[in-house]
Image 1 (cartoon, each protein chain N blue to C red):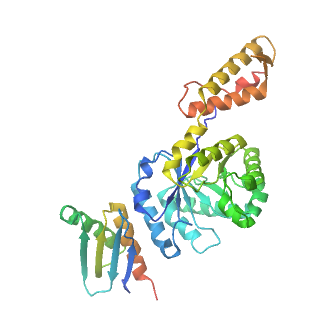
Image 2: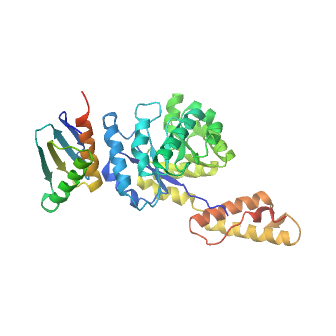
Image 3: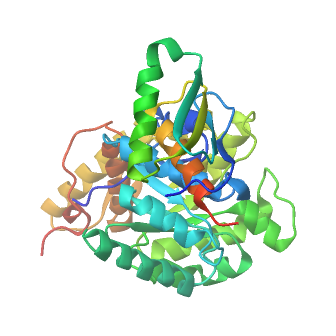
Length: 88
Length: 306
C-alpha cells in the first residue's frame, strides 16, 4: 500500500489518538505521548504490525497518543494508512 | 425446559469512541449495540468500522451479547460495515430502517454469503430489525416471521415519531398503538420485543415509569443510551418476591389438582387453570434467569401428561 497524500485519523478524546501520515521517500515514525518514556517501544511495535500487514514501506507517520490501548492504536494507524492510499 | 435469554437491557455504545468501547466488558447490561450509524459522523464511517473490528478482535472473553448497528443497507456504508465487522464474530446485526420484510431478507442473504465465506455455521449471525417508521409498524407482522435469524423486534420511537412528524412525549400516548402492534407481531412469531431508548439520562423516575409501562404492555427489554440507566431497568424487570412465591404456590396447586384428576383448582379464592399456570411458569423462568431461584421448570406442568 502506497501513501499518496497527507491525511489524518483519530480524535483528541482520552483513550484515543491522532495519526498524521504523509508521503516521504523513506519510512519514519514520530511518537508523542504522555506515557512516552514507559511505552514508546510498545507503541512503535504496534505501528510496525500495521505497516507490515498493509505492506507500507515508506512515508512519515506521526502519532499523538492520549492513552490509547493497543487495539485503538492499530485501528487508527490502519484508518490513516487506508485514507492515505485512496485516489484523489 | 426452554432456557430464557434475558435481553432486558441493550446498551448503545458509539462505534468511534475507544473510551466507551473498551468499557463494554464491565457494563452490566445484558447486551450492547455498537453503533456505526447515528453515533458515527459521515466523515468517520471508515475509521469507526476499523476501530470496532480491532476492538472485537481484542475482546476475546465475551461476557455479553454483542450486536452491531450497521448503516442502512440502502446507504453506501451498510455493506462495507458488514464486511469489516463480521470476521470479528459479533452475535448479530441491528438493522436500521427495517421497513419491509424484503429489506430483512436481503440482510439474511448477505449474512449467509459472509458465513459461507468465513466458513462458519449458516444462521450464526442473528438479526434485530429496527421498527422505526409507520411502514415498519404496519409490516412488523411479516418482518417478525421473515427470517430464522430474527430473534426480536426493536421499536425505535425517535425515528418513528419523526416519520409521523409528531413529538415524542414522556407519557407516550402517541406510541401506544405502534408499541402494541410491535409486541403482537413479535409474540405471535414467538420472539422477543425490545422497546425504544429513553433519551433523558437525567430523569431516572421518568425512565422507571416508562419501563414499568412497556413491561406491562409486553416488551421483554429496552434499548439504552447510557450505562446509568441499566440498574433501573433491571430492577423493573426483576420478578418481585411476592410474584415468585405466588407462582410457586400456583404450580403446587395445579399439581395437587392433577393428582385429584382435575385441571382447575382454587387458590386463595381465585381460579387456577392452564393460562394462570403458564404465567406462573413465565415468572419462574424469569426468576431463574435472574438467579433468584434454582429449580428445573418443566412446561409439562401447564397441561400435565397425556
